[in-house]
Image 1 (cartoon, rainbow, N blue to C red):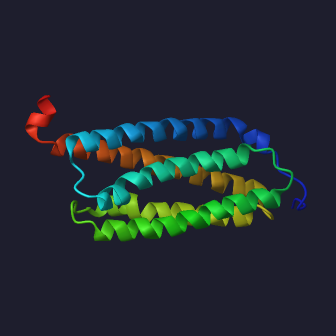
Image 2: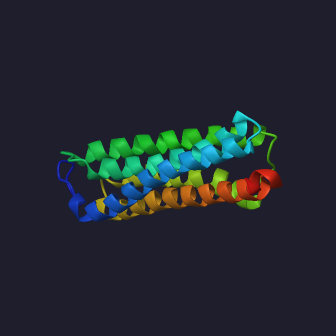
Image 3: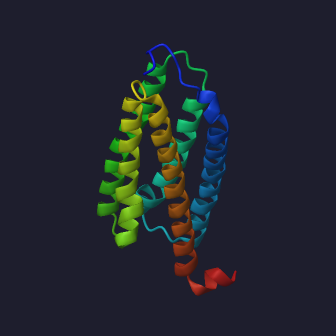
Amino acid sequence: MMGEGSLPSLTEWESFYVIVGSSAGALTGLQFVVIALIAEAQAARSMLEIRAFGTPTVVHFCAALLVSAILSAPWHALLSVALALGGCGAAGVAYSVLVIRHAVRQTGYAPDREDWTWYAALPPVAYTVLFGGAVMLINHPTSALFVIAATALLLLFIGIHNAWDTVTYVALTRPKGAREN
């Protein structure tokens, strides 16, 4: 067990978080392109649909980027890292509740079981696990770092899936004339 003042070797994770953080940053930019395509196709009927299905994708990418940044920062105490990650996890759980509320309230799209899994079920699980990993960090830092890494990847994969889902939905539902232009 490590003491409160000592840090596990976070530098061993540097390459991992450079990859995850860079990917999350680049994919966040691509999601802006996706939203522009939606606006051009006029596929989004209301802001509730964007709040339920578009904005959360950007948030999940940004959360993966933030986790990567937190674990790449030059911390002096493990408790500080745990508090920052715990805050991210708690905020993510709260945000996930809002997303579910928006998904239920919007009427422009009827989500299927897969949509509920990727947009409503997996994100709160990921953020809850992130919070749990932050709590574990003080007493079980090695295990916690693997849990946190898996969570960062899960958030990245959720974002990738949801961005792809949005692009294919827009491509398949655009009016024929809009696709030919």
